[in-house]
Image (tube, rainbow, N blue to C red; front, top):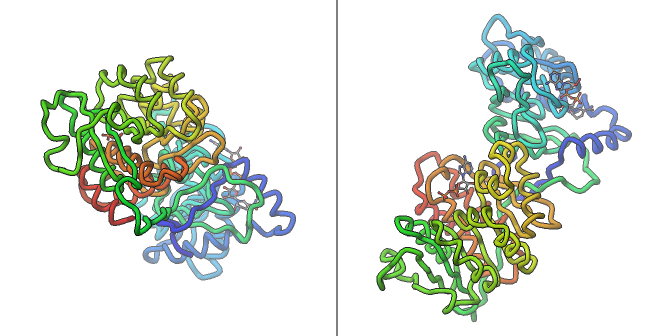
Length: 459
Ligand SMILES: NC(=O)C1=CN([C@@H]2O[C@H](COP(=O)(O)OP(=O)(O)OC[C@H]3O[C@@H](n4cnc5c(N)ncnc54)[C@H](O)[C@@H]3O)[C@@H](O)[C@H]2O)[C@@H](O)CC1
Ligand SMILES: Nc1ncnc2c1ncn2[C@@H]1O[C@H](COP(=O)(O)OP(=O)(O)O)[C@@H](O)[C@H]1O
């Protein structure tokens, strides 16, 4: 067994309902699923244990606890001291096995369960969560919360490792899932699901190479429209990203007066341009936009064949029913929106918390409403398009949490849309978000402009 990430292949993700159907179908042929699960947990526990202390297995009443109890028996048979109880052992454990709740968690935690979770989190030993960290909802990646009146909301096990069993669940990879699951392992227990996945987990995507005869005209054009007063940097970051992604020509239409100056003094390849001069370009619209972008959007939306809408373009659309109608009436497969959770909340007219409560559903609803591809950013970005199975991005990390990293993503995606004009936007959005996340997986501070070079190296 090896950790699942980074992955070179896409993985199917199954929500709780699908996992239960798969389990029922598999049990007929493979009645010993729980024994297999328990053995898999014990095997990983043996590898993860640090020191000679007992392995503390906190087992709940359901099948997740059943997996934990079988693991305890297997460990004991190997001569490992075990402590299968809801209270911590008297001496410091060498490993905590969280088998309190798995996919059966279906309501807020009571005080007793929250106390067990907090006791596990208080241990200095590594924590191996069985299937899903207890307290985390497997479908959404959000904590189930606690019953009213309990002080600590959002209580969940902060696992160092999670062993997902039978299927991989979406909630391990988006929202709080990435932060709570730690390193993810997977054992399919010998079962190959027959049903369609709820979502896909992204992998690197190879894009077609240029032919020897290709020239700048074959590599498409990008028109970046944005950069209101004081925010020109956002438009320039997007334009630089589009250039390095391989667009043949990149034009910038700054909303702030530029007085005949260069599009970007630090990147002489970038040109000043406007819709009138490049009506067939891929639009990257809204980066550093300001309210001025609203007046530009009707013409841009009706003319440009492909468009990536970000930042203030999205805020303008959220505030205007005619602009929403203009987006929704564009030809299918020609528009991507790249909201962060607050922008998605404005577009959906709900709260950020409601978006985050179910990121897959929020992205799919927006895709349906605006009839476009939606790249909902954040930990475990989600890409949804009408008629497509959504994708959860498996890369990324907090180094991306810096102003301008979204501009780089929008520009990069625009660059790929121009260069790979025959490829579907959904595929390109998944590929761009995956590459952007992979470039951002560093343990140091990464100013947004410095994302571009590693993204280029990942090509
Ligand atoms: N049956 C099998 O053969 C297999 C079982 N598996 C394991 O089984 C797990 C699912 O088992 P279950 O369906 O029994 O679910 P869980 O063990 O996750 O939890 C079930 C119990 O917890 C209760 N519960 C839910 N939320 C609660 C809350 N907030 N406070 C208190 N009680 C709460 C439920 O009413 C139910 O009684 C998987 O996550 C996985 O670990 C897997 O190993 C695959 C094979
Ligand atoms: N903790 C994180 N894990 C993964 N990705 C992150 C994290 N924090 C930020 N990001 C990514 O960084 C980018 C930020 O975009 P955005 O909020 O639009 O920034 P800006 O508007 O400043 O460019 C998004 O792609 C988002 O998914």
